[in-house]
Image (cartoon, rainbow, N blue to C red; front, side):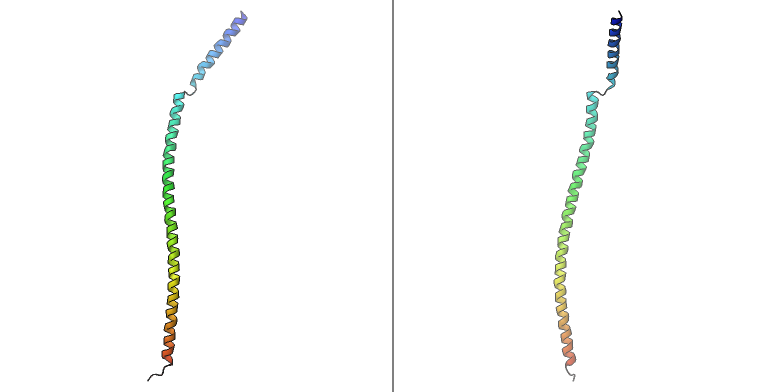
Length: 103
């Protein structure tokens, strides 16, 4: 008889334990939570792609501006050379005029 009581007690404990495990998350609940997280991830992914595109465009524009600035610098250097040459010519002509007698 004691053996039956022990077995019965074990069965009752197992059934009670199984009943309390019903509080675990169901597959449906887990799927809902994962779907919510996936939606948020998709939104962040879209924003990240937008930022990547914008930063790529900004980088391309900055590189183009740097190239244009370099070209402008070269043109300024050329013009400085021409201005220096003209300045020398003006000074030479002024010196020649100063040497000529007036009269």
